[in-house]
Length: 480
Image 1 (cartoon, rainbow, N blue to C red):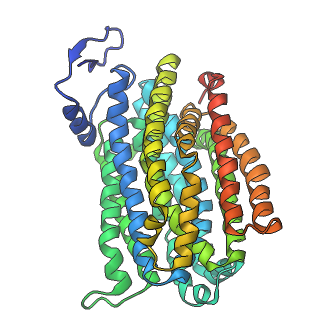
Image 2 (cartoon, rainbow, N blue to C red):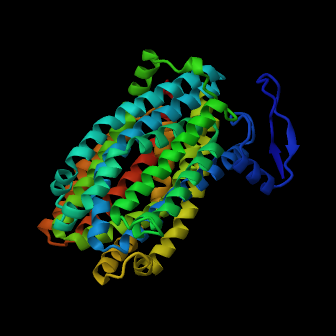
């Protein structure tokens, strides 16, 4: 197989055609990390080098989510519902953190593509400062108002009296979650996807080990129940952040921060904030839409919340590899636009979108054939199994559209055009999804099925529309 493999940093020299020893060597290099210039090597190789570690990174993240709910599920449906209701608030936090992370990836990718590594490093420092500031209000609310927050979401008596400590830990220690998002976004934008992968494998691997020990007890360690799950998460992700910072200052393949760069830079902070407004907006719209859906399900019953929560974890498990490929698209779009190669950026999106579609079609078949069997892995409650299985089956009908939607959204985000996806989300999630789900579930009395069908119709439509808008090409002219 012949691949363009241009390692020389002199952009004036033509690319040299050299044979690749094997695809397995490329996979090995992807996992180990490489100094390759993603704006100059062959596009297929660039996708492979970026997508492999990004997929493996998010596979571990989704594996942890599934393992976590597996152990919590042993404590009963109310415990699972507590996790689901707490995550509605974490989704707000995620929306802000992911919005900032989206901007950080776009800006750093653009600076790397422009060969301005010092500016990329200073941007990384400002992003970390912002991440810390973002976490403070959520920490305060979680520590002092955990019970009130659960009650506001319609939690049952067990969740409020016994599950609130889970909420305290998860929100109170949210800074490690925010920093994990933001710093890994730095690595992705720089092209150091292998570092981001290793960090999440370490953090979530530690979580998985600690989960059963702290939930059920082991030797001198007492059983902490659902609180133990939150403590395990906080410890694991805190260790991951420590690892991120150590590597960032020690230096990766493409980015390194020096002590002299650790200072407040208002101009760069404002640029991150300006670029992130759209990213935060699109995430908030999507996440708050889910909060409203969970509130509707809470009125239907804790079984509906538990079934939806388990289905969501399975959904995330299968979406994460697809998001890994989509994140590769964001990095390639940002770096290639920085190198003034918009056609190469567009070509990357179409290739990755096709790969994503094939993957999601395979997942759809599994959802359709084994939906209830998948839910039964995490719960023995027949009602929960039926509800969760129904959602997976409904998703299977158009799951492949999600693959194209993710990649096209990340193309906009990688270009720094975070406003367009925000406008799209506002229309399809707030003006269509929430009213439609409420109408089907409450007015027509479809119960949980109404919520699931509302999600199906709205998210299939948003996926097709976003892809159509991408084809118009305006994103190529965005400046960050």
